[in-house]
Length: 364
Image 1 (cartoon, rainbow, N blue to C red):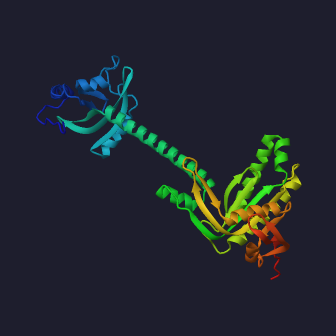
Image 2 (cartoon, rainbow, N blue to C red; image 1 turned 120 degrees about the vertical axis):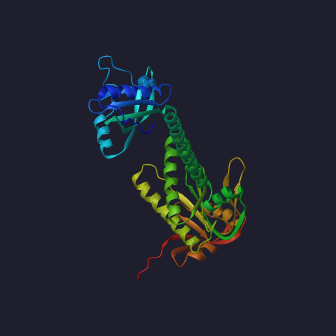
């Protein structure tokens, strides 16, 4: 019903009402609600059954639409129609215990020289319900995507705690990793003096909490100098430089990390009741790096440099850093080292070893 006009009718509200009733009588069976409204006094001139069903008549004011369209700003509707040919809006109506969403299009029509408003109402409840379901589904999918991303980040963080990033990237891309040999890697081995006795005599929770605090600080130090923590075994801490991607000053950086670890323990011991004293060994040489395990992944290192670092750590005195001759050759331009002679090293024979004292103090 796009345009209603009847120019031949005599002017007058009675004749107009009769005409519009006859016109809307043809629309009684439509699902679209139709009503002709006089904007002068907001009386309904004619309406079909669908409109009456959605907006029941108030017995106290049978002709007025204002009470029937509660929640609709009719003055705003009239203002909009004064400057535009039509105005569309949506409203919610109650039908018993249920609500229905209606889309209402209002426009001006002429009947016998009189301007009336034609309101066309469409039930869009199913459409809105579908949109709400889609919105709800979309929000659920977004929530699931966020949860999956969080889980992915947690898994990635966990894996990066047990393997270098380049190894993780290879595992992620190909599902496996290739063992690699590094001929000039440097390995740091650290453990604590008297830890076994401490673990037995002290409160287990306290020991583990302090050890966790210390290892966390070691991780920060190692990361600061571009090295990689490989693993911890009880009170043992293993870090490496020069793998999986060798760089120019790997051994120098690992030596700096070892000195920072010792300095950190000295400062911590001055403020804590329990003293933690470490022995550190550093060796340079051939290392094999590989991912070990199927169900439980562990990135581990093997080879002569690993074994030598463990032997040097056992030869080290409390709070000292013992290094092999190859390591000493790589760091002596940057650090003060002290020759502590030739010693029998199990599995390596007689070897010259040194103590790492500190960094050189440059005057320029």
